Picture 1 (cartoon, rainbow, N blue to C red):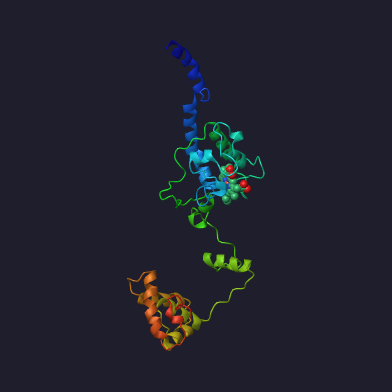
Picture 2: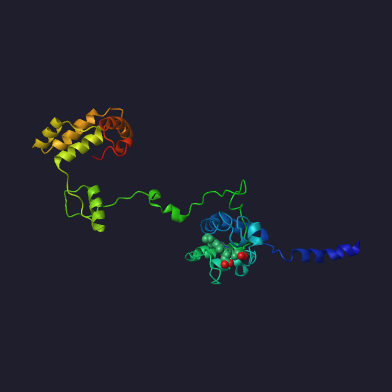
Length: 274
Ligand code: HEC
């Protein structure tokens, strides 16, 4: 019994030698760093190929277990030793044969520094990077590249390009600039006969009568066109929304072109072209 007690101090010293006193505090700090920075970095830059859609080189870093197990070449990380960790070596481009993410610019220095610190503190996870419910479908990962897609960008005021022709509306000026860039010359304005036909097909789905055409073509009123549009719009049922107008004009224009053997009238989107 006495011998047992004397042996105890040595036993405990040997047991705890590998675990520093501040282990718990360091792991907590590592976990915090993971939540704040590392999780996002790995999700955005690595998960697609290492546990998300694919598991390249057998390396799945979804969980700490997978990280420590590593891939075909080595363990992914040695907790406490970033310099010996394949993951760190890969992102820091220490070995040009294993530069991650592949064919992409090196991660920003502060991201690499965060990864190094996170490993040095113990490479703790707060929870797995992906909740694999059925073991297959990974949740959608929205990268910063995705966020730059024009449709998700915040609205901002854009000045229309300068145009030689100051009578152009702001939208026309964008179109004119596009034409110019493509080396195209836009078609000139249409004659009054075509204009009234287009307006009728667009707004009521039927062609104008010869009398209506004649009246418009011979009118010297500079406001004739806006007046015509107001008149045509007043014929559209008040309940018709933008979509409703299309739906409403479709049957009418089908009737109008029923004798026509072409199939253009079978789609609501071709009725406006005349
Ligand atoms: C486009 C896919 C892709 C992305 C994104 C990617 N990897 Fe890789 N990764 C690979 C491929 C492929 C290999 C195998 C490379 C080889 O050994 O030639 C690999 C291998 C590795 C290995 C070695 C694993 C082993 O032991 O074999 C590590 C570590 C690694 N990647 C870390 C990362 C990290 C960290 C990121 C994010 C910063 C990342 N990878 C992003 C494709 C990718």
